[in-house]
Image 1 (cartoon, one colour):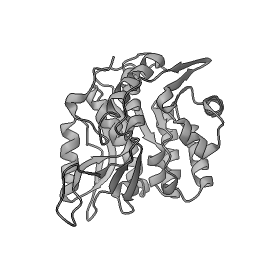
Image 2: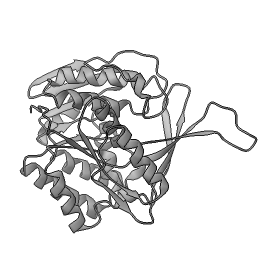
Image 3: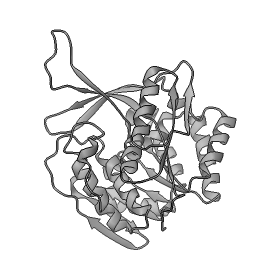
Image 4: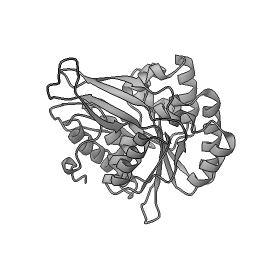
Length: 317
């Protein structure tokens, strides 16, 4: 599939953004743990980095009517991310998460997100249909496994129906199977949802470790075989420090990642997705796009937090 950018070309990104807390390096007063406040979420990270790379992005989510929701929208607009399709819910507030990072740069998360308005974005049939009527004017839609997980079963069924209609009307779906076990009621529920989602996917950007957790795949070749059996035409399996396996039709290429000193792996996969899609949206081939993804990701993991400073952005080729 060739994605060629024009002035009208856009990508919509469906998901959830939360407030982000990270521990500050400064000393606090007794009984006070200094924190830095930012924002993040896998799909929002993709949106910000893609916008920084010149993509025309609309973020699709739910927020509240509180001061922090106002602040989030201000921040996203300052990054060039469109907010026309952000639904505001009275009496709601955005979710929150805390990042803990170990000495090797690996991170773990604590979440406060159960009442997040993004989880209720597709709860109403008529409102969901109206949203997707607007999305049908946007040629590419990106979402992740976390997007799937935040919806209840009825909302997921509604989403799958709407995605099928979106594709029938010419839209292309991109899916990153980003997996968070704690967000799912059971392993079976996650597996069933992923299978249905992949059958509605044009470009898959999974991570080997996630696919192994959900499906028990032995290796990246197993992931590719399974996704192609669902009808996915373009697959890029992210392999962490080893790089990625880019597959189109019968061509399979291992694209190596750049070795760097890792500070924080937060948003490594998200930034890869953004670099990859930024190249594909202007018609570059998957191998060139994979190099662009690695170039951005290798920079991002040298900084703390999900979103790096704007002046640290590399010139992705």
